[in-house]
Image 1 (cartoon, rainbow, N blue to C red):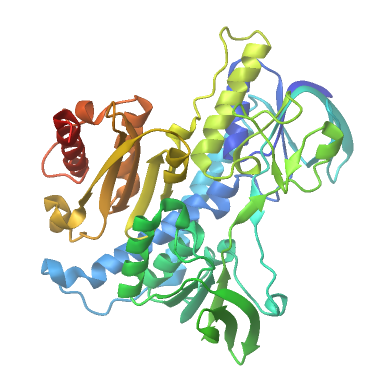
Image 2 (image 1 turned 30 degrees about the vertical axis):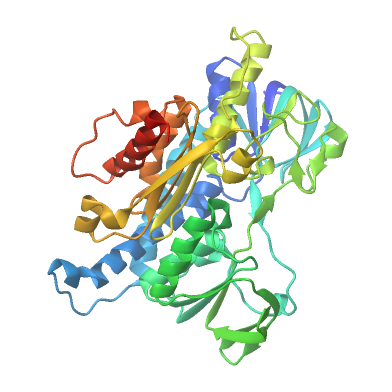
Length: 473
């Protein structure tokens, strides 16, 4: 028998939506997930994190093999088979997808394939090929993710161009890939295709790449990109796009005037925006700022019984945050329904932020950003240490980059960290734990680290800060 009333309705069955549904079901709360996508699995698994990292792994291995002479290993006749690269990636994705689909169809909660539209603040209409039906709820969670931003550039609609999802399906290695957009996606794809063997040009409106990670990190990524032959065009504004024979030509404006660059393929990677159109949010009393749903620290919208998690409400759209938010909102609903005792408090404070970009070298940030710290009255101290002076990095032949710790001057409490270098995204988690535990640099510097490892690099800025603070200098 079809149910027409649930305690919780979740719109969107991606990583965040599934995490919320699974927790709600564990708490004994009647739950339905409504998903309108053509294919179950979610962005991360199907067209985002997992396929991109699979391709990047192939690119990094190819780059390592090109540099193998340094290790006394000589390899000839190196070549990339994009068909085999894609086949490996697809085998992995098929496995990840099957696991997620099995979870969604496990029976722990109901799953409806169709588009959900709010018809009131306690009701949605589900539109599917079979029928339309109305479902009432006590709580709703919006987890519809995001969509690529397509910029307005003259002529763009008249040429074949890639979005990130197309680049991740490529079975032809571009001779020359032009990338419009120098954020996380653009830079990851630039380093990926350079590693596989393409010539790459990357264009960025602002004056730096991966601007979310700060100037020092951006400088390293720009420097290493150019050293590898990637053409980096910062502070440029694309004006038009056109076909010229079998080439695509991008006309752009910079401080030097108007110029052109031509290549075999064009990738548009100018960010993503919340997928909130057509949800009937106004009828539910849910307010937006632009396309992003306005939420408080508890992920509540302007209708307090309706929540928004993941990309639809976050300025920094990252999967782990969507998952944590889904689980925390489920816990809050369980408390409000009397299924759990306690007072709800979100753990997603600004000091627990975490962000990484899988370029080569990788770059990452944990804790408060520089702009967030500047808004406070906290007096800080910082110290950095370069991989060029780190033994294990030298052994690996990965000496580009640095790590940096930022702490409160009065107490030594670790507030933030930056890393750009080998395994930076793995390495940043050690400091994320220290930040979460509100550890001081003095406490951190006493933790034993095995030698020789990449992880011990954090001990050097920690010891430097400890010495400085204890001496009062």
